[in-house]
Image 1 (spheres, rainbow, N blue to C red):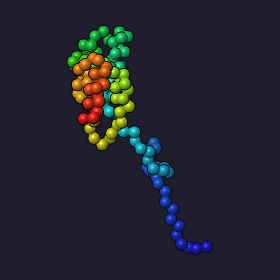
Image 2: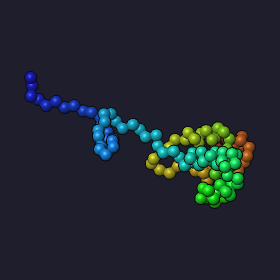
Image 3: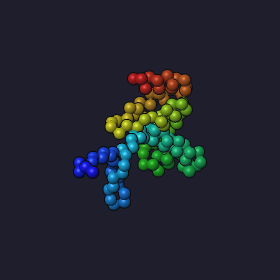
Length: 131
């Protein structure tokens, strides 16, 4: 037998388990990134719609008071539910990024929402994405 040292290389990452930090084999899995704010607002718009439809809250003013925001802000959020379904789907699956600001904002979508016609919304959405 040889007395030469043996070197073994493993990829590990640290994980917090209860109150200890342990090493686990393998590289750390890629983070899916944070959910973009506009996707969270779109989900909130649908939640607001359900509250209004079910009669849980009677008016947008009551909803605003309950949520601690202004009534115009409630309207802005609810307007997101008026986007064409395919645009909504794309927003919900928009890739998150932990390293910077969101590429699509609710304010940007107001331009898309200026028209209620879905075909025109799609054209405006294409402009926003490309530019």
